[in-house]
Image (cartoon, rainbow, N blue to C red; front, side):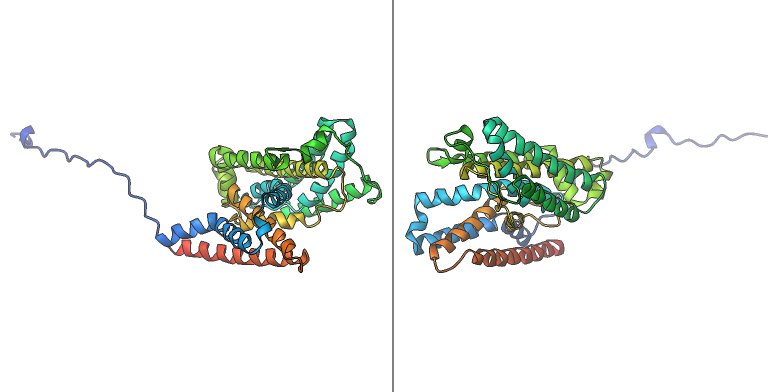
Length: 349
């Protein structure tokens, strides 16, 4: 029986393989104009409001635009700015720190008490104690998974209690030695700008670089956006939270020490409600309370806006300082409503 071999197709007649087209990255969807405007308003809207208020106040009150008044406003705002810087980092991670006002006051008293042993003791003692308070906050929040509101509220009460115990219920006031190097740190100036202003600007510059140019800063945004997603990505979520709360305590203690140097004493009644002012400045500056978005520059503009409002109330004369809380609360409500509207409009676009 003859076997038949299967017919083969000549190589010349075989179909040529199809050449795959080079892969091209899909173009990113262009953001709408409304989305871009919304992001710009969220980041720089407070700066526009600040400049508008300054411009109007300069025309209405000639003394407002004077150089001496500007120096006074910025020096007074520098202490809140340093505290608000730490609060910005905490809120970006989705947390909150209610203890900064009491830690600020405690840092001032400890600095005034330690100033009798020299410049470095006056700075080191409050930084160590206040940094330790922040470290405990971070450990309880990150490791024990306790709510930031409860932990920092307890720290607020504990720091204020330590302050009262250390000063015999406020009966003892520690004074900073006159003409000391530590007193010069709070009262001295360079080219007319006080040292607290220069320190605050240097810290904000370093904070801006930390937030925008380092992996740690990007981790802050990731943790604030979604802590679970950041954990799945392998990011050090717990360590990041511990660091930001420690930094918040350190900055609050430093601000309190600088304030004590400026006043030449450790005043026990300062810092009451300062945590609310810091939160207001941060939120007015465009940082979302839910975390995941914010900027250092926005916080600086928010602090200056609150300081300018307080100065305007003093310029009017017929209004007392309680009106600052009313105006600040109004600004805060407007900003939070605007943030919700902008976030909703970006989701729909």
